[in-house]
Image (cartoon, rainbow, N blue to C red):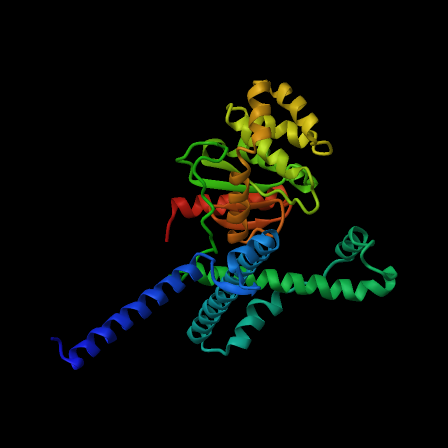
Length: 356
């Protein structure tokens, strides 16, 4: 016969195991969304049910959180990089002032302030005429203000040129480069070689007017740079303001399944004001697609999940609207002019050829 003390120990072990098992089951239920949030007459209401009821709102809330987090990371990097640049400039100026045996203030007086020239009458007149719509005062009233503004611009430019000259004479290393995010997506529609030194990942909406304009800019870029760039298209339909953008996005991927994405891409933007299903079928025919396969693809919603994946990836990367372009992961939001886009591409090509 077992002693009462030993029996007691056995029951304690069994109780511990039962409690552990129950806690594990509760944890599993909680992790699976089955956490009890309420009940009615003993009928349990789970977290999974509650989340399912407002799934759309929760998804929108999560996307906003992802965008806010990305914006914070981007802004933090910007603040830190600006601080780094200021420290570098202060060090360059301080070293040069020490070398000359003068205060830093005197250095800038000699190299900047004393080199500023008075703007000419022609320069003031030209600036006023070019900006007359924004200057809400008479020319006589504006002249002193325009003169001061042009002198400040000249001072800033002269200071930048002086600091650049100082930097060229010293060894300056920046380990902190531009802010980048990973937006690569194998299998998405693309043009250009995988080996291209610059990858352009474009988040866009086929009903977006600015995207239509920016697509022309990107076409010019790809023609200009050839094999040096690779363009990747990712979907970001703004369904709250563009009700047909989601279907157009799915239609473009159905076209991609038949190796006709870029042909469809051009026609979707050309017809951006009418992207109802019936017109999508007409566009598909113009593109030379197999109409039956295309209609079956579109009706089935085969690529809906792919579009949603792109939307989530865009939010995670900080996409707040369209068009948004990532140049080797560098964020450019808005309908940037051609010159601004190629300036970033040229920087990337230079970095690729001369890595620090």
